Image (cartoon, rainbow over all chains, first blue to last red; front, side):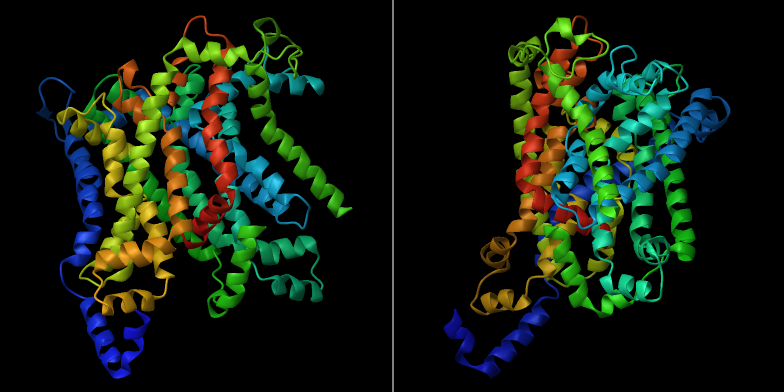
Length: 329
Length: 270
């Protein structure tokens, strides 16, 4: 191979030109990406359109299919208390979960970003719960939350607090969901950690030369530099909040008194408990719309608060170093 | 002083994160008499390893294990092959509509699973695939946006001169892929494999929706059946919880370097 390569530079240049041309055209590229195109049409685009279509039908899993126009949507808004209930539960959950999740993940990442011994061990400890299945997580927490024998109430009793029966108390069930969800969100912490490691050290140095203390550095260097990561995590958290289903199904079954009846669970029950496929598809599209609108609003607002440092791109070597540090540290 | 605060916080948080796991393990080892005590006993006075075997026999977990391994192995193989082909197509060719198509790949990551869940169910129902393992395996053979993205980014970092030299020597595109590119893709393929094995092993909603019959259940679905099952004690539930968590935990420990790096890239590029 090497011999041919060295034979004749002019010939080689001509061949290279030909090659560059050949990168264009031909069916080859389409053959390579065909699996994705096929899968996209059959498992994503097709179902997406089909679910939009059936949302305008009364579509039981067996029996007669009837076109009913926008009746499913009308029913949702005007004649279905469970729709509003599940929506408000989900929004309440999101309002609690999203900010706490981001603050916790960022706080843990910042702790790990200090120069400490054994940071890999601590990182593992924080990430470990994210590795196991949502079913395992739900089983563990249903035992932790046990009112009489649970470890959480034992822990609280050490401080003289009489803990509630978490999962059977309408006041606490949603909080219990939030705590259990926070426990399994280690990947967000890792993303923040990578973001923190990507902040050039000289920014801190110049800040401290200018007389900024640690707190001032946090607000003037760390936070601005990490806003793109916050944006990413904010959007993923919002989406995760709206898709929360496993915990609701296994920890509380939506109860007590529907206090943890998430929107995803409402949708799931309409489809697979009551077999109202058309109605559930309408629910799904409404949720999709909410998530899109929220994402759009967050993106729109991000122009005001997300800070993109052009410097990073101009200095790829530094970025590379930072990234390497991120992988070994 | 700052060091002391940092270490204290790190240790306190670690304990908070680890305590529920530890509690699950010790519960799995307890005898029924020590289960319902307040204040609870952290360490059982007698370690009952027989709990694991007993719990395993309450349901046909051997069968569930077989199903889970089948689904995980076949779907991971499918993802590795299909995503490599597609990522190579996007990374190494110029063709009409490429950038637009790649944008769609990225956009599909935003679509909530719930929106396509019902039509997919109906589709598989029409094909007669409900209550078989096929709905959990077949879609994996057509690539997944996130993995395609990861692999494409990786291929883009490989120098094009390698491909060109091989092509001058008369190698076909497919030969270039399998002889030149794939051997260099090791770390990123491991990452995709690890992610897929974990998510497939841990998946609950897929099996819940597509499987009805106990003979087809996966491990997570089997474990979830314990919920509300009469006469199943907590130590059995925790024993199964621990057992099915071992593979993902083991993989995490061995592949930690790849996983941490991989998740980090998502955030930076995402």
